[in-house]
Amino acid sequence: MNTGSKLSHLACLSCGGEYDAHILINYCLHCSQPLVARYNLNNHEKRPVWSEMPRTGMWDWKVYLPVFKTENIFSLGEGMTEVRPLSGWAKSIGLSRPVLMKDESTNPTGSFKARGMSAAVSKAVELGVTHFCTPTAGNAGSALAAYAALAGTRASVFMPKQTPKMFSFDVALMDAEVYTVEGTIRDAGLLMAEKNKEWGAWDVSTLKEPYRLEGKKTMGYELAAQLNYKLPDVIFYPTGGGTGLIGIWKAFKEMQEMGWIDEITTRMVAVQIEGCAPIVKAWQNGAESSEVWDQPDETAANGLRVPKAFGDKLILTTLKESQGFAISVSELEMRSALKAFAVKEGHFVSPEGAACLAAIKKSKAEGKLDESWDIAFIQTGNGYKYAENLWA
Ligand SMILES: Cc1ncc(COP(=O)(O)O)c(C=O)c1O
Image 1 (cartoon, rainbow, N blue to C red):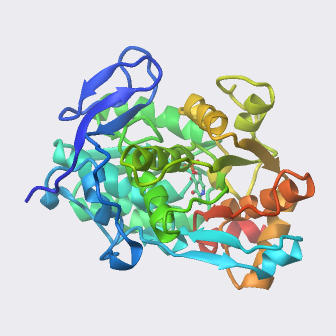
Image 2: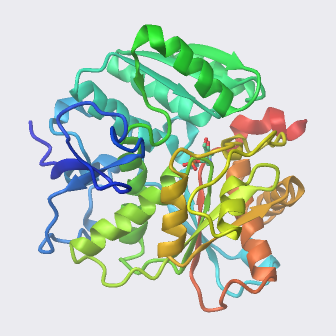
């Protein structure tokens, strides 16, 4: 059966190159920048009402996703996560309004990475892929292993040795191959590239193929629908590779193209950890791209230990376009926020989610947040998977 997908082609935002969406292509052949999916959207499209949606998962948005045949959709029920207004912790840091938490920890395999991998694996299988590979800080590996298992395909996952054991455990449980590597996700990517010379597996590294972004963008569609299309004034996003940040912004722009929202007034904020903050450094220097961060510090927020994002230009453009900003927090600020939020709200958030909380607190103290603003953050993963590193 057809999904009704409106996918039309792939585009490079950097050089304007366009590509057929019926062939497998990683990134732009001319300038090696990420490709994004483009859809035939028109402004007569009906805007779904949240309470009337089936809310079965992110594939409720399948018309705006890239898969053409329903039999090629591999889903574990990802998406349609709750948005919760929480006032206890917000009050404790001097905010008069609740903060909105988009709680992605309830996704299959415990993080928002499920959305991206469901879309990427589904589309790649539709185009004939039988072997996937990725470097990972943990969550992307768990998600790839799960969707590859569901699709009956092979998966090879490369992660830093410092990654909590739970991540290599669930990857191995799903019968994906696990390689652990000294260093960072960048070193994991280098080993993978070496191995992949032999394999020719489909590389689903962050933004090195166009479709994980499509899964992640559904966070933006959902958030808008859940808030009856009144977008938050600011969204804090824990930024490693940046797919979610770019994806949410892409969703808002697509919705605007369809006439679902008039003006996009949301400021996007990239949150990083002080010991590895290449985007913050580039933002502060007014640069268009980031430099490789040498010797990143150890952190419990594994997903933020990314020395250089492949999509750095897109992240920085999004911050600029949305009039947002980039901010870093210390390991101690992140850990204190994780603890304070647990005490006030009863949530064990991921260290990356906690980095957003610390960034909200810091931004408030620095006078960057207006009293009247609706403040949202993406709680990207389940804290329980990180227990080992948080104890250390
Ligand atoms: C829980 C969590 N939050 C945030 C991130 C960073 O995500 P992105 O690569 O989309 O910036 C990751 C990446 O591994 C993660 O696992």
